[in-house]
Amino acid sequence: METIRLARWHHEGLLGERKPSTHVERHSFQVTVVREIPAYAGFYAGYETTKRAFHRRLGPDLPIWALLSSGAIGGVGYWLACYPLDVIKSRVQLAKEPPTRGGWASGGYIGREFRAILAEGGR
Image 1 (cartoon, rainbow, N blue to C red):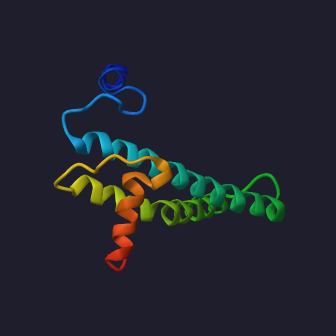
Image 2 (image 1 turned 135 degrees about the vertical axis):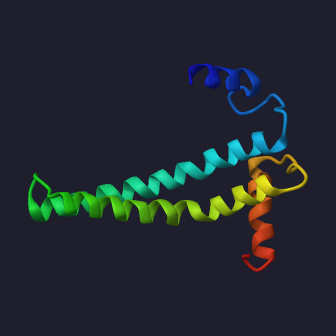
């Protein structure tokens, strides 16, 4: 696993400055990272909030159903936070042409793909 990680680092660099073999490899990696940040924020916010609420009501030794319920609420938070970006990631991966570059101030290719989805009526 370490060899794969080092090979990818050598091939793409920190933010994918070097050109990989396909556009899908580079752009899907970047949009996946962008998707995962709010997704895990949603998961941990839901999980920790629910777990702390159970802790206040039931005490420090939580039953397994309380932990499972906290994880379920965390999962809902994960998908609510990442689903829109997951749709964008899928469209970027399935595109015939690589997305054009654009700075974050102009929205970049993620922002342009989001606006295209809205223009199509959200499909």
